[in-house]
Image 1 (cartoon, helix red, strand yellow):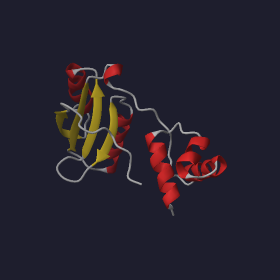
Image 2 (tube, rainbow, N blue to C red):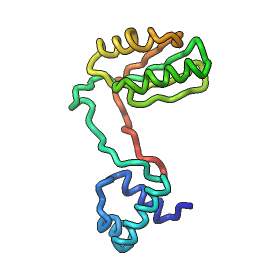
Image 3 (cartoon, rainbow, N blue to C red):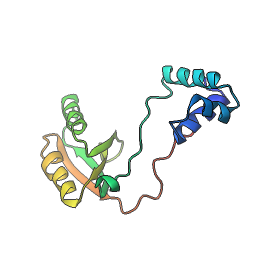
Image 4 (cartoon, one colour):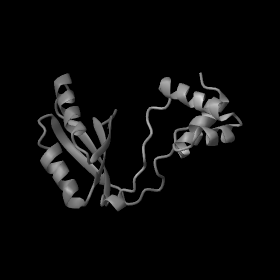
Length: 151
């Protein structure tokens, strides 16, 4: 179970994963060693999965962000596994979810430009034998960045 200090520690690390044990201790009113032990415990228990850097897509030349809904025509385990293998190989697909409703999958993609998005859809996704339909939405502006999880 998480206590209030664990929750505050997780919130602080979501804002800045580079915090030292000293800085965490100051934020939480703990000694650096206590803060470090808490962080290690939360890592060991799986509350903290990893530490990553958030990159600016535009600075990397990824000018098009989109969401792609995929509907399968075949829903067996083999088809689903084959489609999951396909999307795991594509770096421009940064997130993928299975969904309820009309679409079976929702993919978040970042591409350099519209022709790159078009190639992804028409040369990669649509030719897959299990895919029946693809629908894409292009992000015009992102009003809120991926926010920290509530703790």
